[in-house]
Length: 336
Ligand code: CP
Image 1 (cartoon, rainbow, N blue to C red):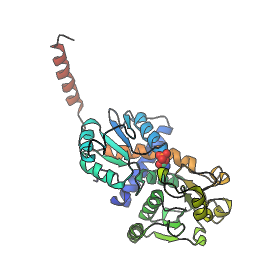
Image 2 (cartoon, rainbow, N blue to C red; image 1 turned 90 degrees about the vertical axis):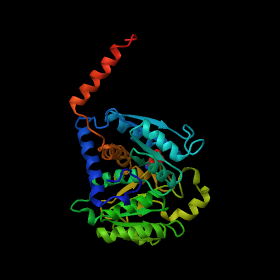
Image 3 (cartoon, protein in one colour; image 1 turned 120 degrees about the horizontal axis):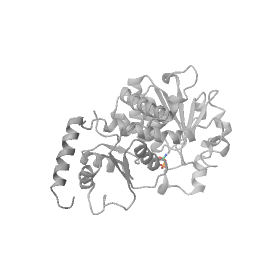
Image 4 (cartoon, protein in one colour; image 1 turned 60 degrees about the vertical axis):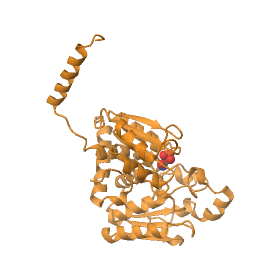
């Protein structure tokens, strides 16, 4: 069992399906009014080197709903990489919390953190990938499979910049035997390194992949997915340059019409309305982007449970003995 959730390529197809099905099972339980106390008495340390809405709020809500607690360790709030090395931070946090998640600027930071932590570490996005987004997105795809189709029949087209979300979508869809296309402009497509992984995944799963700037590759898509144009947050291009490079890659009514009948729109959000997607598409009946945002919570619950399920169980007898010992100790003290 891999201790950390850093990259979905470290897991088998069966393990990933298990994570998705666990996430959906907990969602169904909560929808029916049962909040399983699966994180009871546990604490999640949430390191953020960048801002976040969905990742931060969904992790914190997931912990509260399942009886645990989350601590927000935002940019500049802890010593990580400043006065304290990443390795030392990992050793310390492992003694203070039960599980760690981190959104990092550079992927090597999350890898180093995971190596130094003895508790599970979950990747809340790096410059390389966004695996918790992948599990949430697959929950949404599982819930909206086109009628009569199985995963091996489904075509997912990512439109626009080859961001870490694009790479992640390619990783998980090819791992699960689906058909993945990145339709994006030259210079902003998934790299050879990404393509090597997509090819390896497809050889094992029977899926397919294509990276292209040929618009006809969008035809018959079951899902059309996009992200903001060029990088995220701090790294953006000037608007004029963005529009010049990506203007053919806006997800609008014309592009959606190339998809299969019933084609759905996906977006990891935040969106830049009027650039990567039109209001008309984002707010249409075909848009699943709001459900997708809700399924970030679905995924966080499942992943937190999946990666902490190995914690030691104590018997009723052990718990009662521990309580008696502590009570005897306290009774001997004058302050009780
Ligand atoms: N999609 C996503 O990760 O959103 P946040 O940056 O708001 O967490």
